[in-house]
Length: 288
Ligand code: UTP
Image (tube, rainbow, N blue to C red):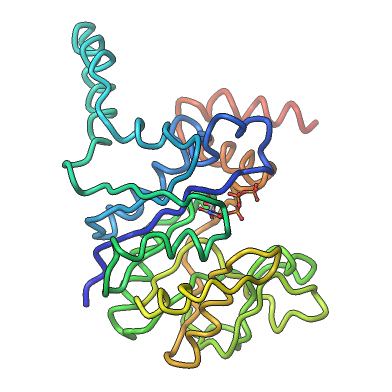
């Protein structure tokens, strides 16, 4: 069955970015001139996804507003003949009914956030994208994964090799190193200490999941940090179905961390010729 729907869990508190995220959603932090959530939504749309499902929470109104008309602004841009800007902001506004919002009433964890979308997703495979993982790639990463899903007809998680010392920050696979980018998963552990990690293959924020995951999430079992973890639910899914890790093609920036976010801004700004000409000499000067 075709993957048509993508879930964007955006209900987290974003505590690592306080005070910036006290009143503003973390997903609205901008890399150069676009919010993180827009990069992720564009990735999904250019991968053939037609239904975008946001799982939001308190103080996430800005995300809904970002993907809607702002009549006063549009009229002003029109009156000033700022046509390129007008096109830029209008292309963000979807056809009514294709962007759907639901709420996670309490931030009980990523697994719980995904479960909140169960009624909207229904009985079909779906993608999950975490906007904090911003990935620069020739081909959109979720599109790369959907291609693999169409071949394998099994759930797929996106992975990256991380330094052993960093395993406690990720869900980690028990699997062999990927061959031709793929590896069959034997098990998964959420945030293991380096000496207990079964590998250094870390799960990053892209998933293609079969709907059976919802029955497992329904049990609402808590794991690391007292949260309902998607990693634990996928570990249980392995009792019923195969699951694959996919080593994506591209470069990831961990925009959930301050340093990763700054790196993303520098890398994306350097790609813009108009900015590069001033930014590069500035950076070189700073590093002297
Ligand atoms: P994080 O683990 O980065 O948590 O969530 P967070 O709350 O956003 O940020 P910090 O760690 O406090 O700084 C990963 C993704 O899962 C979503 C977040 O919005 C983010 O996109 N999430 C997490 C939820 O939607 N609900 C939750 O209960 C937890």
